[in-house]
Length: 303
Image (cartoon, rainbow, N blue to C red):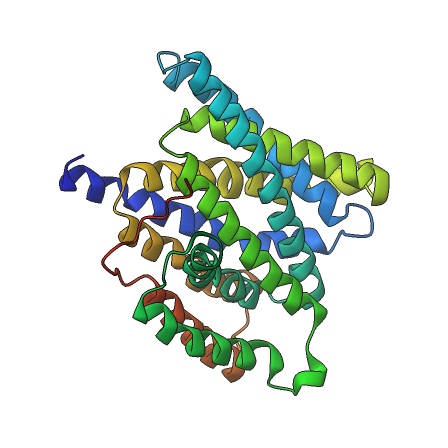
């Protein structure tokens, strides 16, 4: 693939970052109805919305795609795996937002997945992290301190820990996408991914949580907004960007979701972030950017 095509594909990840960042305060809106529609149900419903949005696109844009037996089986296999991982990541993220009540901070803690990706690759696949990743880690830890621990380690919010777990799971999700992107039909893959995650969410909410008609009607805007933009558009564009784009540029564009989340929260909720939040966000942004400076080899190979 030409370098020109790679660079032209990379901005798809910037669109993903914009959609994710704006969706953080929208998800915070949904968390206020958690007593009638819990995080399981909300995430399940928005993923099903995302799957439904993509069905006509599969029929329209991938009608002439490769539907050989191996291609279809790989698409189903990786789509189901990615859906299960995305379900876990989305639930921990939504619960973290619900408990912290600070969507901007949630966006920055979540963005640590860009630091965790090379670390997980080293632990499980013996891919050594670059010097820049090692330099990024102290910035990330210090940023987390200002965001979550500045009141003392005894004052840590459980929601912050959930968001940290969420960032690790999202890192795993990115590795799954990196492994599968060359072997699947991307829009069908995304549709399957969201359908699996949606069914898991709604079923779990029905068994263990709270999902009511009133909760659904009261949360229609967050469900449909995040389902269309954060789920269907953002994750599909991320997959297309990773498949055809420059990896480092794509990662840098994706990291902008954290900054967009803070700006969106301030605009939508008409308030300014505290000094602690600003310092923490700045340090974590430095960590994210440093972690994505390319080394001699940046491609993750899981085989």
